Length: 306
Ligand SMILES: [Zn+2]
Ligand SMILES: [Zn+2]
Image: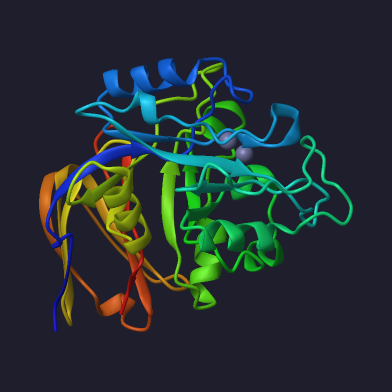
């Protein structure tokens, strides 16, 4: 039996799912944020300003930033409820309605007795949004915290702003903990750009969709038809009984990770296609693929469930 990925019709579109503007604490207008992303070769973004009272609960309507070659998905970064460390939750919701009901979140300090993060994540998902757990490392999230967000589609495993500004941009520990508990979650790489530091154009998603429209992109995100990158491209993944074939842009290292310590790694010169044995991953119910180029930039597949 062979499982093939990226076989759905369409093309890959490059997008950033986590961005701020002057509608919250970013320094550029929504229009200028969109202009810069398009100028840098992106096909779409979601502007996800902080959905708190301090900024009048913004869900920015970016429809007028769309053009023939660039689109936007309406979104927001949601905040409500307290994590185990006493700090406020951060969740990213892409594909929200403009009239999404605010929680009681006047600022970045949690309010006793306010709506839980699990509840607002579920409300966002029920409203049609693609929901991700934002920057777990920077947030200081525990396993118990992460486990409560049962409505999440994904964990943010690369947050470029956090990499640049606090060196806590990684989310794989949180993601894999949940995968090992049987939770089917995908991953996102984002910028979390505010444009007040070099926090932009560092991490993105490549979404395979039938067309570059908010509806088609959102459906593909929810279906998991995408991969994440800081540079390389993954063009094909085929999982058969005893091996995994990976096709990509020129790579120095290609690896597969699975449950616990299971992994297989191949280092090489300018690799564009490899067949890696599944033997060492035989006991893992999931596997995921990492491609690293000569410059150390990475691309990550979503988990493949066997
Ligand atoms: Zn945040
Ligand atoms: Zn953010």
